[in-house]
Image (cartoon, rainbow over all chains, first blue to last red; front, side, top):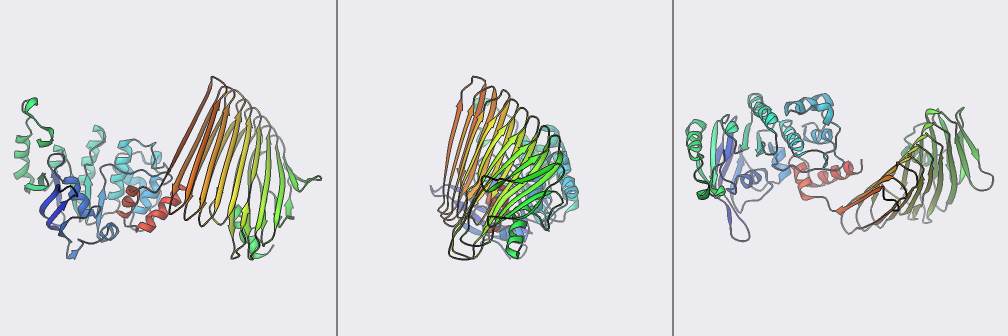
Length: 245
Length: 305
């Protein structure tokens, strides 16, 4: 179980990016965090993974207090994180990255290909490719997702996995998360604006202005989100205040 | 051949034992072993220190090893090796130099290699330089490579120097005929107070000739590196020079490109990027469970792979 207690993050100019966030993600749950852009979703995910340090609050993974643990320690404790904008590496190949991601530090090409295929990639075309600028945004994104799938950790966090992925692959992506949910015992946390991803969630958390403004089972939250997403007159709509679905 | 020589040979060429193919091993300025084959002849020069390596026309998928080993301090070796590659031959040449010093005197090796590629021939040239030993004497390697590529010939050069060489000035010059192709991939890592300089100069004289020069370098500690590339396009041709360097600690890296189009049909590009390891790269690998030091090592190993 992942638990956040009163987690806040205030930056130098005094802006409160996260305000007293309290959150519990039980084992085996599929949780989607949604809400307007700039609402603190990605920051929350980064705080859980240890990429950003909160100003105050506590984070527990099961009974382990990971509040002050490093990124590495959290990764070893069972937290995986797929970045919204994956980084590129000159020289490292797709296979190298998947090797590093695997528990044993090595994964056979055939096994690695299985994970690449699951994210809609023709594995043989990619396994020896460098993770450099020659890969498209969608390709590097799918490799990023595969690098998290391979770890099979207690908590797998995906920051806007659909961003940059074409429609055909997006359909496969839903299948990937469904399969992952069935196979692994851990919990999945996805940050997303996509209705189809919200639809496969157990629970939905809505964040706005650094706070959790609503949370609960999908069936309780999704209808109101869909209702609120009906566009109003364009000249009265502020994109940052709209829940994108 | 003593243990040091065997270790240098292994590190420079990857050989655990003498190869079946042609070879010439030079140890401390003297010949330490040679084998010629039906297709590859090796002849000692009479006017200066060095050898001629003669590959017969139409030789296919053959190899020749030409390592130079310096196993002790106080050696100052200079050698002139010329490679004559016959028409339509396709060969791999494994060369390079290992220098080990165990005393306070330095050692130095300067290998001047000239390649003459006849039409349609193809050469893969693998050159590795390495230094080690407990001595305080400087290990210096100054290789010079000169290439003449005739019509439709191809030279692919992989050159690397990963550790242990205190000072190096690496000079590579090439003249390309019609349809000739030159590819140079350089991998370089310096540390401590080392200095490395790479000088590339390519003249593309023939129509539809091409060259691609690529250097990936890591500079650590207080080391210094200079990368200079000069490409002249004198006909319809394509040239690309690329220098990527990771800089760490207090190291200094300079890159000086010079591309000159003497023909309206010449297409020349130079790219250079110098910077430290990106924080996002470290963070990504740390989210996979690597420590920062492990992540750094993986990034560097991959970069120089």
